[in-house]
Length: 164
View 1: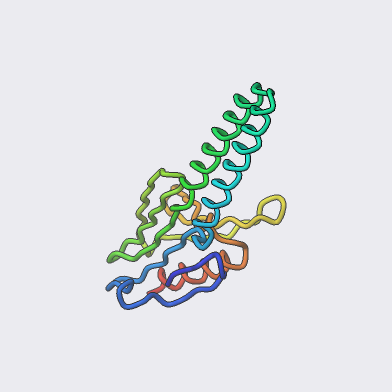
View 2: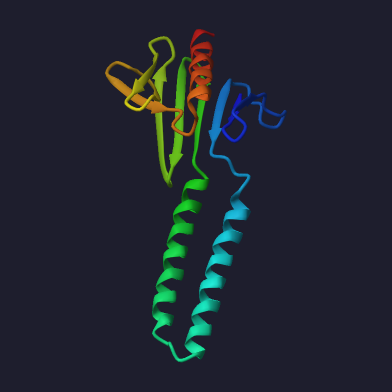
């Protein structure tokens, strides 16, 4: 199963995505990637155009500040781009359930015995839901990329994977 956060729908994988093992893939929505780049480029272009206009009128001290603004836009875009490839993958491999995640460029992999796996849905302050999986004193948060309704669906999917 693939959970698409942009539409909050659990869909069946295509034939190419289907493997011999059950799996759940969660990704950040990627529909707006090109529009984000366009917005940042347009903001930078407008900043430079205004700064050049003022510099031509004799207010050349505007140029260093416009340059700083363009650098700040570049850093903000880089941070957004770095998080756009975040994903979480849950798959069954024999008697093991493997949780893989890549968040902000940091890859993590945890493996648990599926017969000992405990799944809990906890509500924190501000009505924020967190899913924890674990066994033998080890716990891992999963489903960080999902909304509350999708997290409830994910708990059900993980419990189905464990019970197979």
